Length: 305
Ligand code: GYE
Image 1: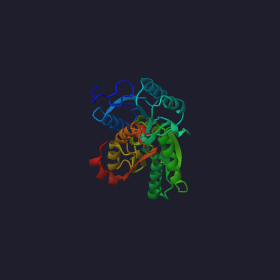
Image 2 (image 1 turned 90 degrees about the horizontal axis):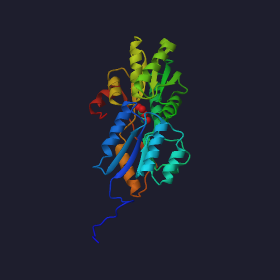
Image 3 (image 1 turned 180 degrees about the horizontal axis):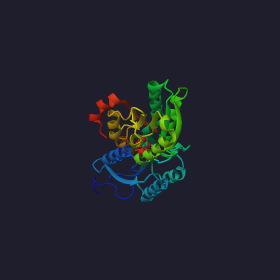
Image 4 (image 1 turned 120 degrees about the horizontal axis):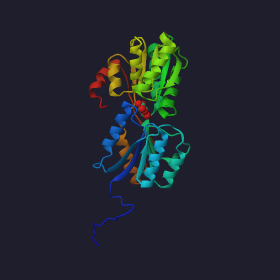
């Protein structure tokens, strides 16, 4: 036989890595940047055959996508779980099919960490903590009343950012007077803020929004109510996408804690290592910065998303 012959059929490692990715949805600027990073990194040139699906923020769609990746026999599955709970059964099915699973961006709350090989993403509690600490530092002594726009109910970033922020302001004279989900979207952020303004009127001194998009929706509601966002009502958000950074530089937002969405390169790296049988880190924490208005002006020209 030819010395150059390679094994064909099942188990042939010569072809591209088939990776099935189940994305949360297209709810925010952050998500758009995250999807772009994944699609631009997991390319044929880089040795990947990417199968990508959008779950429209529905867990049942994600479970269906993962099951279909299992039955197609992909090499590796990656996903960003819309909510934390309810994954054990489908992850068990992937494990039985010997398909490694990589979590990106959001965590699952499973007790059994053998159900996934690695989790790549930011520390959301720390993001909330950074936001809360800055608020106390800037505004303590003013008895500021805060309304909170939460992310998707049950999602890791909504749970963790709330926790981090609450702990950071505890013991100060800043208080949260109302809190509701805006599902990480601009439209719902606006609607919820309209409700807060009707209910609490002039009492509201600050908005803490779990992402830029909801903060941008809140800005529209605040302006429609004849108030000045960033002045009459302070605004703190998380993500630092372009539109958010622009509003920060324009003085309509007061502070943004970054959440880095560019997870494609780490995902590609971990997938290659896992399939090569190399050991990988169970938890890869993505580093984030934070910006006030002056820092946003300086950073804006070089922002990639
Ligand atoms: O902050 C938000 C998006 O999971 C970190 O999801 C992500 C969050 C992000 O919709 O904008």
